[in-house]
Length: 251
Image (cartoon, rainbow, N blue to C red; front, top):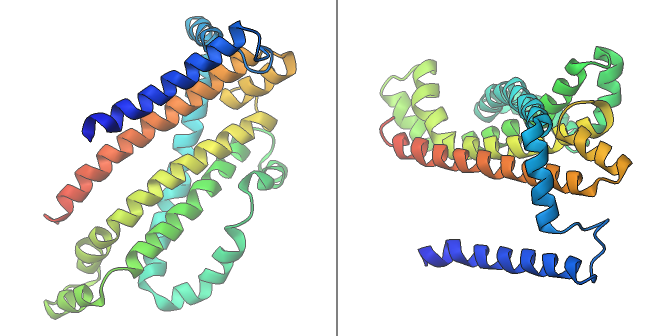
């Protein structure tokens, strides 16, 4: 089963890419809209050697990481507070329910009016995208903790600080880490969307320029790199989840 877990997707991917390559070479697939995988690979290598694509990838990843930190940390703290305090949840939950469904890219024009056309408005948009998943996941994780744990901790004289560090944070950790993955994926999505419309750097800007110049192989190369970033970071988060959840029992 372990071998099938890895070989199965690899065989399917090889079959799809091989059929795609053959379809382009035999004239069944229009190369303008669907360039052959070999053409996309050459474009990826060419842009990587030139350094432009890697520079844009760094710009995108930096926006994602800064946005996740600036939005995820407040979301985590407020989620802990809302999960712990019924009164605070009663006050703020309607506001969260009203703001959470708004497409975050739709807020970009407002932030550009407030913060200007520079990097600040883009980072704020990405931060908002990361804020809500962390808030909701953390709050849900705290609320799922059994009241028995709080009663036992209180009976041993645990204060507020001990209650947070020994019960609330470890108990909500699985939901928090799931929220981190969701926050990163949404931050990456919003970052690329912001770069499509309001940036001259980043992978989103490469995609838009490729569309304007009909360099579709560059467009697909950018999409491949975005996918690789997402897969790589999610793999790292998966390892982090396993490590932290393995240590949770010692907390």
